[in-house]
Image (cartoon, rainbow, N blue to C red; front, side, top):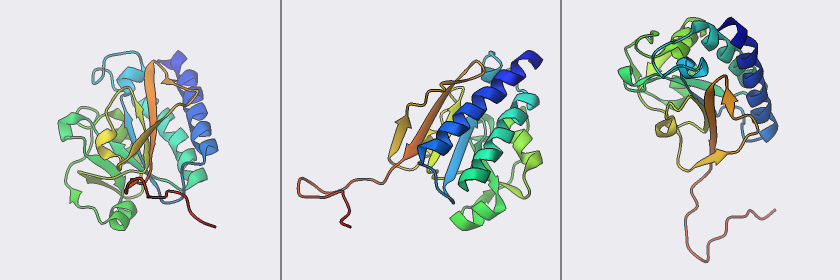
Length: 185
């Protein structure tokens, strides 16, 4: 995996650059991350969690947070029901109910387990309605995105060996043929 480290860092930097350049993210948005570090390493999901890969991804996401003002939410694996790791500040702002579990490599996954040790005041919640996110290695983040999710087509499609799928959300459009969706200036 040592030889793969620069590739993962490079891939993440490219994805972060595309997110920043897209203009879709704004301060306060919740950005959900689903990540299989096993898939990034070229292994089957849930078999080879890597704290080093998690660290590389986490540090790139810190730049995304710093430059856009988003709040990060790390989705855990199915062994703890895809609960999410967030900062206490985010939990309070979103009025979310905290649950008691600590993510580990074996139950939660290497990415949230690493993030838990790095965050200032980490807490776990069961549900969130994120504004955007990245799914690295087909971890299925859709359940944590607001309606309506819009897939984006970024140039950077992989992180290491894992497929990266990115999405943002938009407001629901309601009404009928007489409805207008543009604002008057």
